Image (cartoon, rainbow, N blue to C red; front, side):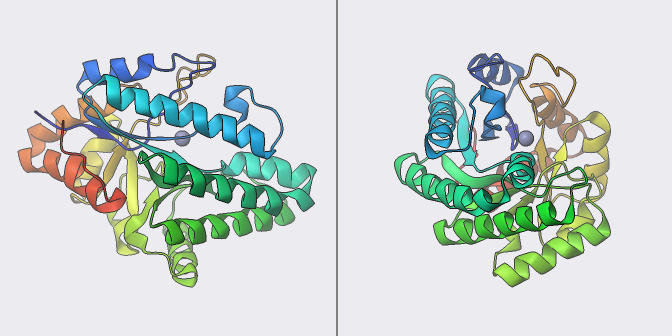
Length: 280
Ligand SMILES: [Zn+2]
């Protein structure tokens, strides 16, 4: 069976199609996925207390478990605190931010012990829109805390941040060095298809699997991952790529080079996340 691993596939059991996403992904030819938890707001959960995150994480993990139990899928989860929400709280109530971050870290540790599906911390990082300096600094502190946690728990990191440029990658490299975090376990979400720029600093580019993106990425090497970033949000149907994007990409890659499919869909994600992606 031909592998098709989407390393950034969302589903929303509250506001979207939820569990149906797994069936559609499987029917399109998908064989494996990593699903990062959505923002609390996406689930209609208010506030940032312990119970709020606990509900969101449980909801997410039970969904991922359903996906991998009901379908022949290598399904994994990622837990974090989305930087857009960190920024929102930092603007409203800066004194609370690090306390909330500690609660989130504590919960990730607990759920990681309970659910073998957890393979990464994410999405975490920096807001992709301009924010005041103080907010940016707080977001950065939270990001560093998550790096530390991922290192302690031996988990990968899925990073969300501003548009990727050469300078951006250089800065990422510096932060990873300072934190002593292995760049090989660091995934840049929504990376540009010039995969060499990311690999030069050692991090893994997760390239949106548009036809063009896939073709460009394949031209600049074989060290990349593919994602749809499918959002499962009926209000924003075109915010990212469709569920079938990565299975379609697998067919495209096969035309370029049969071995490339195995590299991108199985070997690369196995290297980064440390779990199996060979189709079930
Ligand atoms: Zn996402």
